[in-house]
Length: 143
View 1 (cartoon, rainbow, N blue to C red):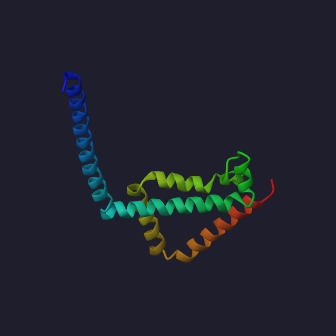
View 2 (view 1 turned 180 degrees about the vertical axis):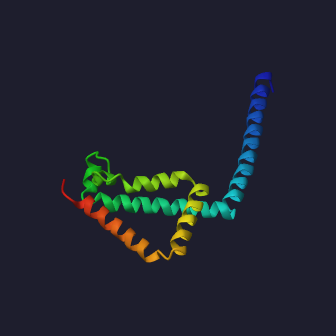
View 3 (view 1 turned 90 degrees about the vertical axis):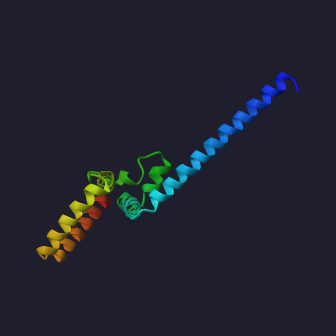
């Protein structure tokens, strides 16, 4: 074996050693990610983020109207383009989503306890239904 072959073998060996180290580090990192993802607060956080994403997508589709698919195909703004003067309710939910779980839950708990304490559940539901009906009426109205 000459010097060139030994140098090539040493380089290949060094490359394999480095790849092994990288693999071991990536395995440790993956284990840490899985351990973090299985914590109860992380599970709740991801479930709420997923639910907000689903609600945002449904509201965008709801307020976008029936012609939103045509706008997307023509290079338009998509489902939220049908809102007109309405300030994109799906975008507002996106702001709440970006607000973070640690800020959103205390506010939601305070609002919910206020509504329950004042026995305003039925009026709150009626107001919510009226807001949804008004939003639908505004989104379907011809400009």
